[in-house]
Image 1 (cartoon, rainbow, N blue to C red):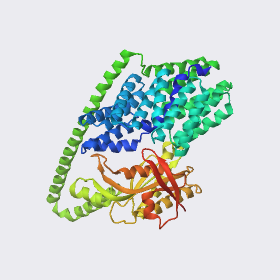
Image 2: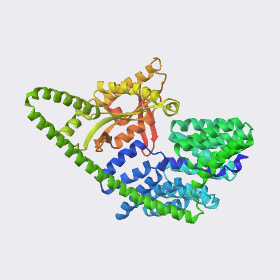
Image 3: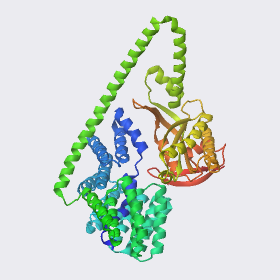
Image 4: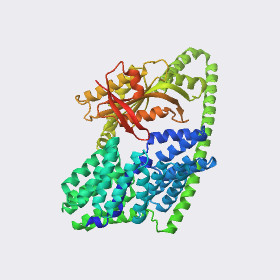
Length: 602
């Protein structure tokens, strides 16, 4: 039976929720912006500590880079004995080591985090710290310590107002009981956790509970209920692109069909899991799914395919760090410390290289200008013709610059050769993305994909221009815009809502035309507040905005629904007299608690 060798990798499902809170839901767009600020070396004090914490969080896809920023955060926090950021630094460091498979280093970091949580005398941090320790013990099959720390964590968290972490602790403790055969105990913890996440309207937490309850049903032989629950969990997690959990739930579905002797269906789910694991570099899933496929093909008598997948299983298995191999652990730490220093040196070298590029580029441009001026002087009879050519080229370059930067910013760049960051007291920010785009795009050729995106975004650009708003950038299927950056548009909030309604109408109409077969539903979120705007980079520079206002706008979008415009309370105050708005209540937002939200009705 496959279950005999799949125990280890299935174990990680129960720990996804807390991971999602503290380290897995990284944002590459946010990471790139934060790196630009870090490389500028213009901030210090607590602002720098906060920046390093966010960098360690958002670079979790690159574990070495994440640990480098966590160590830098710890180093800076030690200077001022800042216990809060020492706790956060060690917590993030532990999560990164755990993702790398180095459980020994992960435990060391988590115990250090708990030490500073005690100094802070904050029960939420203490309970959360014990939870991370329990998760690691459970993952390495140290069931006695795992149960001990789960009990300590849950007992402490029940006396706090941190419902999300309490729900996570119950979920993970329930999964540990499930692995040890206590199915009734697991269901009890899952149901309590599920009630917490339903009350918070926390979709990811609800999805994990649904999926894990489905796994209990599978153990109890209730296959129909198990399949329904696990598929429901996968559908929710696909919307949030939580592929780590999806990969394991797909393997669980494979187990169910193996027990039913439906090998072809089991193969289909394992191959889907393997595709996700390859795409997102999930080492444990790569190892165990290859082993599962090897076993299935062996049962079918296809020894060649069985051997192929078994070899891949061995390769990925050996790449996972083993906590019992002390010598290998020591070598990994040594290599990692070297890579950290190399990364720091690379950052400094890149800064110096950029400075040299700017200097020599400027010198070269000045030289060319001088040569061109001399040539014009020598050919005075062609002055009028040359001036006409220059005027055309200047108009062309100005037009190109205005396509990249707001008018005031472009003028400042031309006048001063640089752009200073500016703080705007009130700006309205819009985010949008297409529901189901990631899965749909996988089946499109590159040419059709670009044509489809251009069809929608070209129209969005015209809409923004119509309402005197600024397109900031696009990444994948995400579109970001802002209003109020030129100080002339006092009704930027109302204009942004009007623009959002036109975007929504266009996307809905696109389903009926025959221009493109790619039709989607769009989610839109809007927030208003202060931002900082500026130009980052010296080559292929980009105009961007930063601040909590931007983060909340992104949360408004992720909390919206297909075909709806979701606005924050700050935006609602500015547009309530102009639009029919529907109060949604207080909804839970990651890292922000509960926020008032409103739908703008048609």
